[in-house]
Every structure is written in structure tokens, then in C-alpha cells.
Image 1 (cartoon, one colour):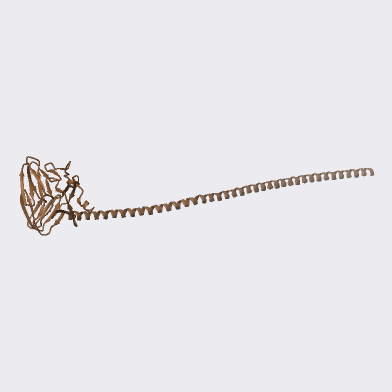
Image 2 (cartoon, rainbow, N blue to C red; image 1 turned 45 degrees about the vertical axis):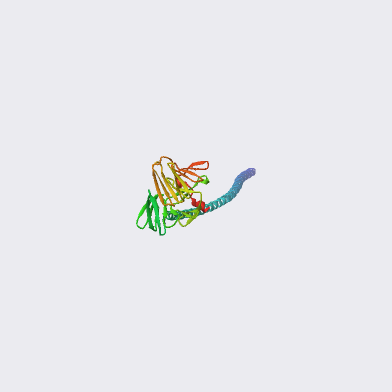
Length: 352
């Protein structure tokens, strides 16, 4: 029985030992599980930590890259700003230059406009002055009034006398003489002073001919006068505001049509007959119609009808065929110029 108890106790001890071993094993298993859990937790924590570190590094790297990108962008922006500033500066300068040039252009245009207006004004004023001068000149040239004298003319052999002051007016190519008691339409026939020896006035423009100077011809204005003083002959030229007196020699005057006025003794030949005339005499030749000869010294007027031959005027220096208006001096023969307005005015030669 004691043996049985001992066996029971041994068995009980074995069971207890076995139970303790099981408990120990369970505890070890639990411990292992705990360790595994802890290790797994630590591993997971480490993974989390590593992941966090990686993420942190990645974030840092990303942040760094972003910072770098931002820095690069800032640099680019700064460079863009600088470029824009550098670009805008020349643009501003160019704009300012263009603005300045535009202002200068406008100023030049304004000056040009002012200058053009000034030039126009000067031209207008000059034209006004010219018109006034021309009107004054024409009016003065085309109107003249004499002092009180006795005057006379011949018309077709008939003597017409005037007394007092005479007013000569030329308008549209027509000359009118106004005396106290009459008005007369005039041609190129000269008007003689009855109380002044050796003076006559020309109502129309005349040409003065210089036979010994290659037949040179000049224009003499209407209302000019010729004066014989002793052996010398002068022209008093109508120059509107004054009278120029010019000595003339070896010359005669011509109206461009039919009338010749002689300044020296001349022989007139009609139908083979000679007629002697003195200075300040004249001849009118109407071809194949008649010839009128006025001798100033004798105050004698002759009319010859229908001449059969050409009519000549002769001196020691020249011959003029008055029927065809041709001059012969020496060996040279030439036709006379009939358009008196085309001749140079004798006043220009006087001024020279």
C-alpha cells in the first residue's frame, strides 16, 4: 500500500512535472509568440520607420527638388524680369527717341507751314506791289498832259490846230487827244508844237532805226518827243515818272507801217521826181495808193496819188525803199521789223 502511495505520488509528481513542463512549454510558446509578435511589431515599426524615413527622405528630396525648381523658377523669373527690363529699356529708349523724333517732325512741319505761309504772304504782297506798280506804270505811261501851248497836225493835207493844255490818253491801242474844245482820235501822225521851234510829240509807239549800226532798231514809247536844238537832235523819252533826254545821230523813226520821220536832210524820190525835206519832216507811203510828204521847215504838205514806181528816201549813208520797207546801208540790205513791241526798248540802252 505504501508502495502504491509512492507510485501515486511519483505519478502525481510526474503529472505535475509534466503539467509544469506543459505550462512551461505553453509559456515558452506564449513567450515565443510574444517575441514573434514583438519582433513582428518591431519589424513593422522598423518598416514604418524605414518607410517614414524613406518618405521623409523622399519628401525632403522632393522638397529639395521643389525648392530647387522654385529657386530655378525664381532665377528664371528674375532672368525673365531682367530680360524684360533689358528689353523694355531699349523699347522705352526707342519709344522716347521716336516720340522725340515725332515732336521734332511736328516742329519742323509747323516751321515749314509757317515758312510756306510767310512765303505765300510775301508772294501775295509782291504780286500786289507788282500790280500796283504796273497799274501806276501803265496809267502814267498811257496818260500824259502837256503845258499850255499851241499845237498842230496834218490829216490828209489838212492842218488842224489846238490851243492850251492837251491830254493824251492811250487805251486798248487807241490814242485820244483831248483839247479844250475837242477830242480827236489819233494815229501815228506826230503832233507839232506851234510855239516851240523844232519840237514834236509821237502819239504812238515808234521804232528808231540806226542805218550805220547794221540797221539796229529800238522801241520808243508813245508820248515821247523829239527836239531839235541847233545842230543836235534829242529824244525826250516817256518813262512815266520822269523824262530821259537822249542825243540821237544818224537815225530816223518808223511807225512799223507807213510813216517815216526823218532827223536829217533827206531826199524823197517819187515817180522819178525828187523832193527835199528838212529835219523833223515825215513821209507816209501807202503802197500803190498815195504818198504824203510833210516838209517841216517850209510847213508844206504834198500829196501824190497812185505812184507808178517805188518810193525811196535817200541820204549820204543809206537808202530806204519805203514801198516795201527795206533798208540798204553800204552793201547790206534788210527788211525792217514791223512788230515794234518785239524790239528792245531804247530806255534800257539809256539806263546803261
